[in-house]
Length: 309
Image (cartoon, rainbow, N blue to C red; front, side):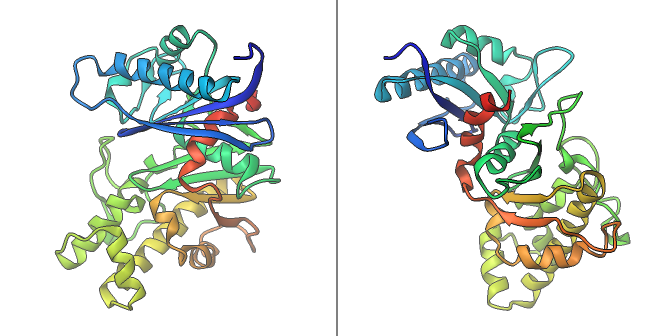
């Protein structure tokens, strides 16, 4: 293996899988490999996660014969005050010095970032936001993660929570939306409780009494089912309100959608038409785009973290 740094390696730590990628310095993919995340409930799960990522990096470098910088995206964030992980869905990470433990295992410095920030960076560098000075990336799937990239750099913020729009209240709430569903963060009416996949599913169930997965709700919508249409139109309006509040604060050039619900093509024309009613301007030139890299955005963005510095 070459000793000099010859590529970028990105690692995306998920709840069920850990994906690794190697790209060259212009973003061309060299190799991709995926392993299972050590299962929840193991007494030593944290140590096994660290070991698995180290082994994944070594495997990639061994196959391609190159050494790379290493960036890691996680479902959480690094506390500025403690240097330990907070707000992580993979709860074994919480309170751990994950970046330092990985550096000790891998034997070199790493870059660590929230997975939504990695997604936003990937789309800003060579995805749907390429060439734009300001990009807001949104993952609408299991949650509603967000990330801010300005001039090709992630804006993590002073408190490490830049882009966490999903835990603000749904803007301009209707009377029927108050106080809002309870959120796991302990508050009610967070954007995430409405705009995540589980939020869409819950909205349909409140209306119909039936538990239906989002993909089936969309199928019903496309077949002009009136109840599904009602739920999707509500979703469009709520997404428009949520993103309008981002536009009013950040005024980004591009908003990029990723995650499972980003595949609803109806959003890309309907939401910008709706957000005009809420944006504090006589016009709005922000564009709404679907992610170019799809599910690969997080792992590619992790690889790009070193170019962000």
